Image 1 (spheres, rainbow over the protein chains, first blue to last red):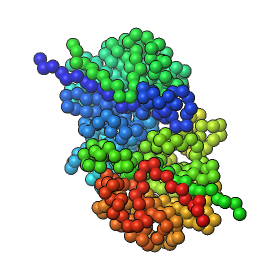
Image 2 (image 1 turned 90 degrees about the vertical axis):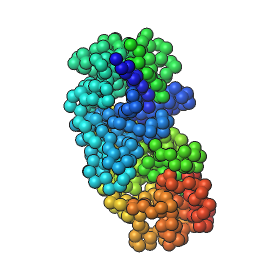
Image 3 (image 1 turned 120 degrees about the horizontal axis):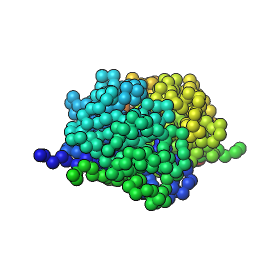
Image 4 (image 1 turned 180 degrees about the horizontal axis):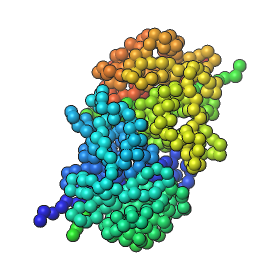
Amino acid sequence: MRESPPLTLTFLGTGTSIGVPSVGCDCPVCRSNDPINQRFRSSIWLRSGGLSWVVDTGPDFRSQCLRAGIRHLDAALFTHAHTDHVMGFDDLRRFTLGAGASLPVHATAATLDFLHRAFAFAFDGEHRYPGYFKPDPRPVIGSFLLGDFLVTPIPVIHGRVETIGYLFSRDDRKLLAYIPDAKVVPEESLALLSGVEVLVLDALRPREHPTHLSISEAVEIVAAVAPRQAWLTHFSCEMDFREVGPALPMGVQLAHDGLELEIGSEE
Amino acid sequence: MRESPPLTLTFLGTGTSIGVPSVGCDCPVCRSNDPINQRFRSSIWLRSGGLSWVVDTGPDFRSQCLRAGIRHLDAALFTHAHTDHVMGFDDLRRFTLGAGASLPVHATAATLDFLHRAFAFAFDGEHRYPGYFKPDPRPVIGSFLLGDFLVTPIPVIHGRVETIGYLFSRDDRKLLAYIPDAKVVPEESLALLSGVEVLVLDALRPREHPTHLSISEAVEIVAAVAPRQAWLTHFSCEMDFREVGPALPMGVQLAHDGLELEIGSEE
C-alpha cells in the first residue's frame, strides 16, 4: 500500500480583524515587539503531495505569501465573507497568470455572492488584462475533493454571517479541522468533528465576546471533540502568548504566525 | 501675518496593485531585497498643524499605519475604487473608536457606492459593535475644505473606472497635487494643475501600459505642468529605483516608501 504524503499546515496568520499589533493600541502586547505576539489576519496554507491550498485571504495576504514563500496554489477556500478573511482576494491574481489559468475558489454561495460584489472585475468573464485574477467559483454545498482529501464544510455560528469551518479527511482518517471564527459549534457539527486528529479553533481572547469563542469556551469544545491535538487561533491583542499558553490544559496549544504542523504522516 | 504650518507628506506606499516584491515574481527587482525597491500599495499620509489625512487605503493599510506610526486621522480621501486603493478601508476602524466618533470619507459618488457595496456593515448605521468603522461619507462634487486647505478634485482618465487626483491649495498657493493613477490628464485638469508647486504623478514603468502613464508619458505631463518639484509614484517591479532614478530629467524624482516631504514652509 502506497504511503500517503503528510499534510503540512502553515499558519499564515493567527490574528483577529485588526491584527496584532493593532493600529493605535498601547496595550502591553501591541507594544511588546515580541514576534510571537505579532499576528497577521488568520489564514492557513496547506500542502500535500505537491498540491497547495489556502484557507482565507485577508488584507495581509500578499505579505503572508511573501513571508511563507508561496509560489503556487491549486485552490483557495473561504470560511466566510468578513473583511479580515477576504480583502486580499485580488492578490490571488499572481496564481492565475498563465494562459487559460484559473484558480478554484471554494466558498458558500453567500460568500461567493460577496466576492462577486466586491471583486466584480474578476468574475465578469472579460479579464481585460492578462494580470487580472481569474477565479473558478465552486459553491460549497457539501463535501468536495482536493487531491486525495475529502473536504467537508462544518457549519458554525459566528454572529450574523454564514460561516463554515473545513474538515480534511483522507483514507477514512479525519486529519484536520480548521474553524477560525465561531461562537457556537452546533451538535451536528460536533458530530462531524468527532474523531478528528488535529483541531484548529477560534479563541479570540480570555474574556467573552458576542461572536467569538473565548479561551474557556474553546477549551470546552476541545474537550467535547477530544482531538489528538488542539491549536487555538484568531487572537486579539488581549491574548499574550507567553502568559496564556502555559496555562492551557494538556493537549491545547496556542498557534502563532509561521507555525508549521505536519499532520497524518505517522500511523 | 500668521505663518502657516508646513504640509508634511509621507509616502505610505509607492507600488502598483500587486506590490513590490510581487508574489511569485523572480525579476531582479523583486528578488533584490533592496528596501528602496520594496513598495506597499500607493497611499500618502498628509499632516499640517495638528491635522492628519490619508489618501487611499489599499490592502497594506494596517502595515502602513504601523510602519509610519499613524495614531490619529481627521479624514480619509479616495482617488478611485480599484482594489489596491480601497481594500484596507476597514482598517480605518481604529480611528473611530471613541463614543460618537466618525471619520469623514471623501470620495466620488461612484467610489462611495463601491465602498458601500464592499463594506456595507460600516455604512448601515447600526454599528452593532463599538469597534466597527464609522465612516462619514462626503461625496466629492467639487472643492472642499480640510483645515486651512482647499482640496480640489482633478479628474483624470485611468481605464474604465472614474478616477480623480487631489490638489491641495492654501492662501492661493497650489501646494501639492497627488495623482497616483492616470493614463491621460485632460486639458481642463492640466489647467487646474497650472502653477502647482509639488506634483506627484503615476508612472507605472518604462514600457507603455493601457491604463497607466509610463515614465516618458509622465515626464511629458510634468513638462506641461512645470511644477517646482515632481515626484513619480505607483511603480511596478519593472521600475528599478537605482537604475531609473538617475536617468530622469532635472526636477523629476522617484518617490519611495517612507519618503517624507515638507511642502509650503518656505516663502
